[in-house]
Image 1: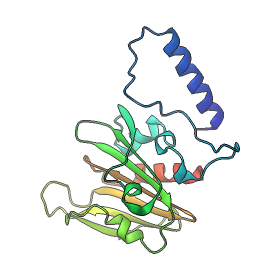
Image 2 (image 1 turned 30 degrees about the vertical axis):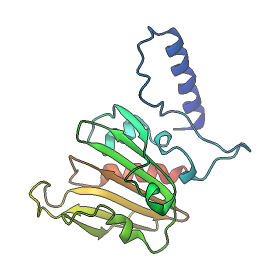
Image 3 (image 1 turned 180 degrees about the horizontal axis):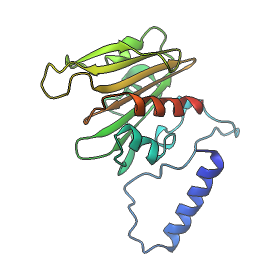
Image 4 (image 1 turned 90 degrees about the vertical axis):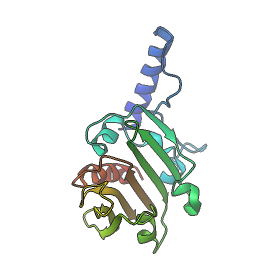
Length: 190
């Protein structure tokens, strides 16, 4: 989404809120705003509020078509919070399904570590080509009986000075297409 469209959407949202009946959901975050530095230039991708970097439609594509009901900046159990730096967002799609996105400075040589960030033994890490300089998929083994073997739990991408990790908490897709499209959209903004 271009900055002009995002700014227009913010003005429309404020106008609608001012004219509305007053029962707007104040608990969820406006995910159409943009972040910039005080000097007017764009902040590094990992310094921005990740919740503003993907539209509801882009998040829904990751989640198999289900639209998110809210977005929250994450600070616990995220790549950014665990010493890698950066920023994280968690979109709620259903009671059990969330889309979690971490954007962080390049962690040279630690891509496999970030792909295996989820410590459960029911996932395997596979090299993936076609996006970024280096990428990994986190794929279900099926050993636990909870996930379908071969479904995708996460995509981790390194491209230049940026690292991205996009993960699902439930309803894992059979292909990484939605994850790849979201990662590509994030990389286009750097």
